Image (cartoon, rainbow, N blue to C red; front, side, top):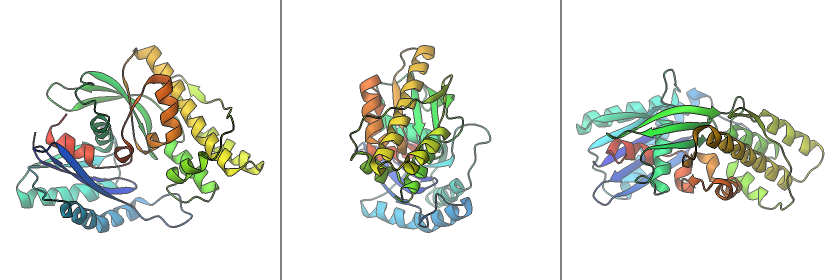
Length: 309
């Protein structure tokens, strides 16, 4: 293992992390990209611009926490580890990593954003040494709602194969759109979660599953109708998360039926929601990334670059 600096420039977070292999500790800094009030996202050109502005700031915060002496630099360069996966925002991090690598005379290792999420989840759930063979990882975010079959390589790293996902709207998109309907701003996950906690009414909903895959566009339409009917905002928020939780439960049941009793690991910002975590923990004993390692972060990228897994 080596001391490693990790960089991740996703949509919508600028993040850096440093792994100290001597202390076996990781520290990280991140900053959300600014989104105009009322907007539900950013153009990629704007995301690139803001990452370029924010990378020096988050790096200053990281170095203020202690010396950073990387022997290797890791950076996310694409959303998923498949051919054709590309988003311009990741070029911001790649260029910074390559400049730092040249100046410091250290190698630069590239990974996907999804691999970073899974690595961060393994670390924060304290199961790096436990999940050493095959397991299923869910990656739930604004741009991704997928279940992937992960095979740990003996020499380090992971092989990742997508086995299920959303056929339309992604979980994070649905949450942000419902939050927008309720005037909660963007991104709206945390505010919508707090609002949902104010409702203790029983929720009845039936998810839409097609094989192992799901469809979430109906959730947005259903929440819009609930608002038109005059239901309380807290009820609408609760309905949103209960619907997603039941959808994920159905996907887990299908995956277990087809692939057997493989361990289940959840990563990504959506998986930090309290309702989803409770439902899945009770139903399947799922392992979750800690909340601070659930949202977009560079911690997993640093761990992969260091050779921790």
